[in-house]
Image 1 (spheres, rainbow, N blue to C red):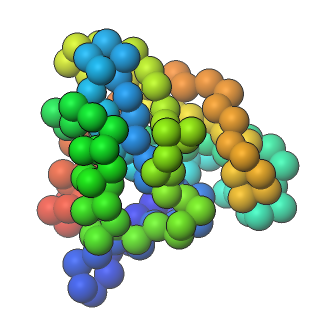
Image 2 (image 1 turned 90 degrees about the horizontal axis):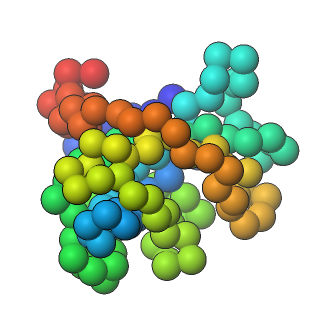
Length: 145
């Protein structure tokens, strides 16, 4: 579960991990974000037949962000060179933009998404609670995980 580091230094995402863009309504800035599938202990991992909600936790959203959606989209394209996601798990349109007021310094960012199975149809955000610290990606990139 999560990102798997490959021999060439890239990271393979799991089938229910997402790469997308968050807009902080407090600052107006756009942040590329990775959400990793993180089921509750009683939930288990999702499958293409899953009808229930899929729980995802974010990482790498504590960046300075971009002033425009287009700049964030360029950053997302760069990240796709290092992080390998299936196309269906890359949310790179304004229709799939997550918006949230997570404060001027990002400390109030909601790190959990509960989504219906987007592989069966259009995604629907149900809730987004819980803040998460910024260090997980750094540990992953430095082989400390």
